[in-house]
Amino acid sequence: MEITQLIQGFLLIAGCVFFAVGTLGLFRFPDTLTRIHALTKVDNLGLGLILLALLLGVPSLAVGMKVVLIWLVALAASATSAHLIARAVRSQDRGRSEGRESHD
Amino acid sequence: MTLMLNAVAAFLLLTLLVALVRIWIGPTPSDRMLASQLFGTTGVALLLVLAEAQASPALRDVALVLALLSVLAIVGFVTRVVRIDGKES
Amino acid sequence: MRTVTTISGRMILLLLVWWTLTEGDPSGIGFGLVIVILVTAISVRLFPPGTARIRPMPFCLFVLFFAGRSVTAGIDVARRLLSPSLPVSPGFLTFHLNLPEGGPRWLLANTLSLMPGTLSVSLDGARLDLHCLDTRDPIEADVRAVEQKVARVFGLSLEDSAARAGGKE
Image (cartoon, rainbow over all chains, first blue to last red; front, side, top):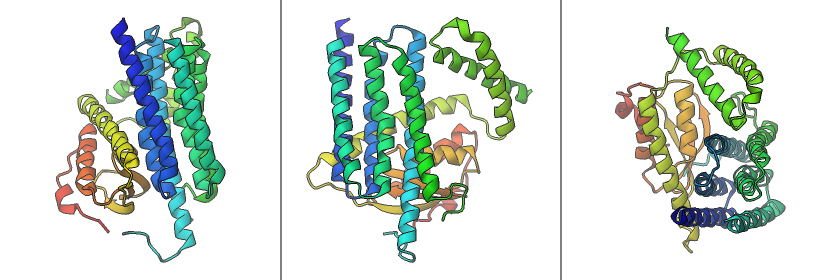
């Protein structure tokens, strides 16, 4: 019993650290696209760790599966939002500076 | 354990609040829309932790709806900027 | 026969989702059955069975691979953020995909968004624009490897991928 709680505590703290780093990324990264990188990747890892901790203590199988289902929805949501915002940013940039194709 | 979960919830709320500063300073609308994505992940984690800490299973449904709505909000925003059906503006 | 397998598979999956959503409460099952049948009917209309089938075993392997890579992605971005010099050199790369239209391309684009250093910006036909956190990384090899794995999930083979690789603008 105690060892489960220990693992849970560790996962929760690790999750919090990643969420904090993700928020830091919102301020340290120079432009919108790199900020999206920070939000999708770091925050998803944080979410994964916290949900893993919660899964260790679920009361029933159905609740556990529900948490997994929410996890999957959140993952898909995050990937889709990242793609959509990135695309909007890019098309705005193109509109603003026609001709200056941004590859480096 | 409940104490720990409450602490985690408080911490997540704090990171959300700090992130709101980024929305405040912007500068572009896209930066502000990142908030919706942020609520999709941090908000979901926060609600699920609270559901466990306060033993209120209904919050799990709220988390599910929040995850779905965050995408819809972004789709709504993006269709204002880009045409979604292939041809970009 | 294949159609019957697909439809019953979808119905079982949806029933499982319903059971999960109601947290195992049996009182709403009649309502659930009606919804499941309606959703299956719509899904058959929108995604006709038999176009791109997912192989179960490679899919499980892909899920494991994806989980590992997305953990790496999170740690990678966190490491860059925490180092004082902020080692990023963002830029765009364009790839021409060898995967067929529809599900496979969509899966590749979405999983790449959660993998280290890449974010799919636009998917236009076979042309995929990626935003990279660090263009000095071997992104190209990475994308091709993931592409091969996605192809395996759908039971396809990409023998021409080496010949048509490239497309770094």
